[in-house]
Length: 227
Image 1 (tube, rainbow, N blue to C red):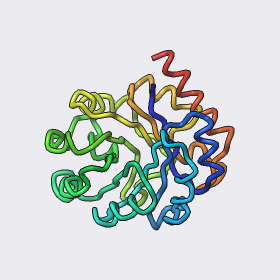
Image 2: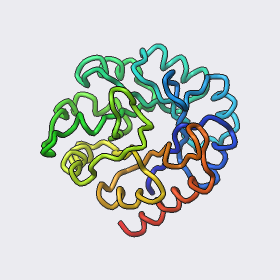
Image 3: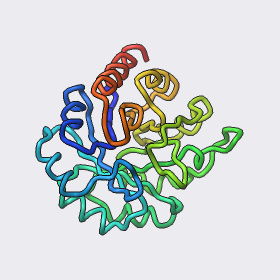
């Protein structure tokens, strides 16, 4: 079954809608510049009300391992998702080592993984961190906006890189510009372990549209039966 994460959750009503729709994980953004940013007290109350089986993922951008671990413990997160500007071989590996014991997801902007000709690059470090992370998210992030861009990347061009990610033993999660209308196509082309959506199921930044949330999960489940 494809893992489905609804990200940018800011209130309990939206979280419950996502759970009822069949989502596997909720994402809570702790990035100050995000319109979906939530404070730890709010997240703690939402987490308390969610089923144990649902993953509670904290999204962090360029934060120290100490800060990430502190928030995770304070609010009851079950996983952390790291967006890093630093090179994978440098600060990120150090941080992963410090976060051992936490389920950790790493976001890699598609632009950093392959060039304009679709050639593979920047993934030679995979063996170094293989046992440290639970999944790799390939996203259409930019330095100015590390997530929630509402834009897709070229899925066909990404196939060689995503295949390397999967063959290396990582769970592949596709993010960036997904919606009920296009998620089946992303699944058909990239065959990911999971998908992650935020703006594609919103009525406004930080406010989910219940019908879009339900339609997104339904589209994923339908696509599973075809792939």
